[in-house]
Amino acid sequence: MPTNWAAFSATEPDFARTAEERFGSFTHHVLATLRKDGSPRTTGLEVRFLYGELWLGMMPDSMKALDLRRDPRFSLQANPGPGTAMAGGDIRISGRAVEVKDPKVIARYAGEVNPPDPSAFHLFRTELTEVVRTFIEDEKYLAVQLWKPGGPVRTTRRT
Image (cartoon, rainbow, N blue to C red):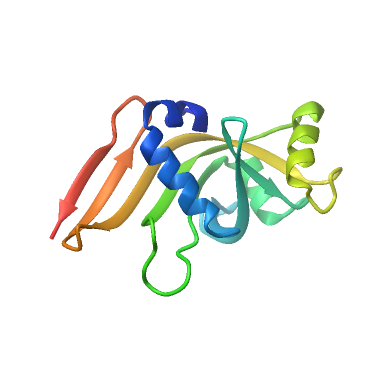
């Protein structure tokens, strides 16, 4: 039961805001896709939260775009940043990437983001299957927040 970013934000606004802030702290993040043989591929990627969607934009015929065309499953991890502080925690988003072909949507996105070549890039919107945040709580607990469509955020704590 996948859902888009707007639906996640509506049901879990604080968690969504934390995730957006965490991804907004740095430009480049890590995307994991699946190769033809099923093995994982990781690569750097810029992401955008616009119009109620989490967008993945890619250069023409990049390996990650070709991976997603073949198998839309992905996992995205926020850049941990310098040092070990990871302000806001470690955020991971998983789901399916759906390539957008509508010229009006592509033009609107390009107008907002200004890609190097507005006429040549792949654009994917995401359908979320999981959002996870791992962080230190009260300088005592390792806390893990997990959200999946159709349910509330579950938090576990370990000492």
